[in-house]
Image (cartoon, rainbow, N blue to C red; front, side):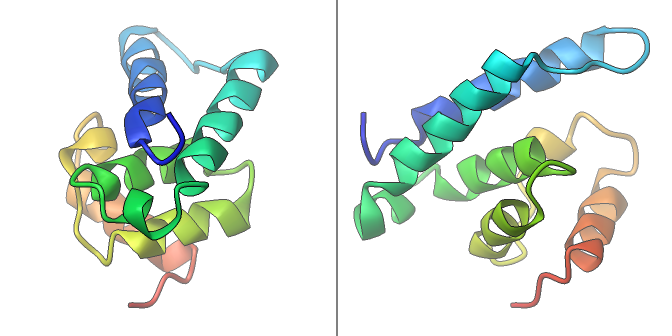
Length: 111
């Protein structure tokens, strides 16, 4: 639904597929388009959407989706979580806190 971050679970599914594959995993263009639409549909809910209890995790999942694809959207989603690292998506990685902080730094996210 508009304003509900449930679409972020699709990013988590992509991450789980990536974590289980050997070698790089590349999402299909149709999957990327669906995830873009999910992010837009969630944000269309305005302030109520951003106040959702799962908003910080959804922001970080969508930021992960936009890494390397759309820097502005990635930066926006990273900034919205105000430096609070959520387990997903970063928990899929070794040295997750360092990777998260490096990602914030490389995207020049300031709080």
